[in-house]
Length: 272
Image (cartoon, rainbow, N blue to C red; front, side, top):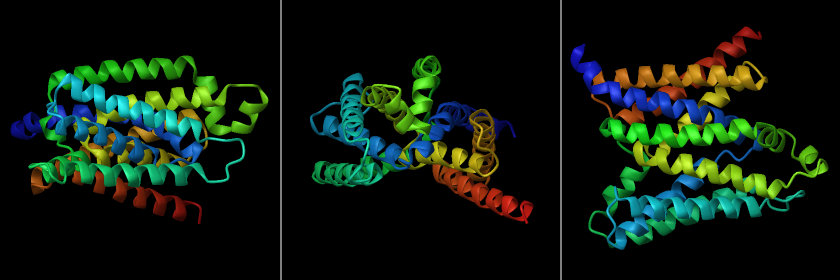
């Protein structure tokens, strides 16, 4: 038991921190119906990191992080500019295209790099087992700053996510607030993907919020349910990973999927 606690304490703490911010951001993503924006921004961040690597910058260097974050901010600007009152092309389609193009470009960039395959795998799966206390402190500061900003401007963010037509009617600068949302979202994603990988970050973002929707439409209630689902999935996934010697990130993602299925079945039988 002591060995289990020693091996999983830091990764589990990282999962709790990821749950805290991503369950909240997931509420906005689902309300906006831009489910794949996390994957797209994460992939754009990975593309920036891949280009930094090709140009000789270390994966863990400050300059590499700055390049990755810069690419993510550009992606946020692009997504905010593609939103219209009347969408000819659904924004989800634009986001999907951005994801596919940035993923393909990353493959091209790293195809001639000696360790390209390993870096591509790392971008998708991460390695949360290797998270360090200094990395946790860093993301706590970053996520706290983003959380405070979202709390201060919660009315604008929630109104645009839940009722964009009313936001336009009230004269809100929707593109500006969209950019601020996507930029702050990108800051979180850039930091999260470096630790946990694209797939696990996507699960933390979408599954808790989707599960919460099964039981409530109230934002506060959904947030608490989302946090609870994230904590349970993290604990069960890491326990299974340790005792069955499975990859940690993949284990947590699969537990997320299983929990969502079970909660969906429970809700179905509960409603008769």
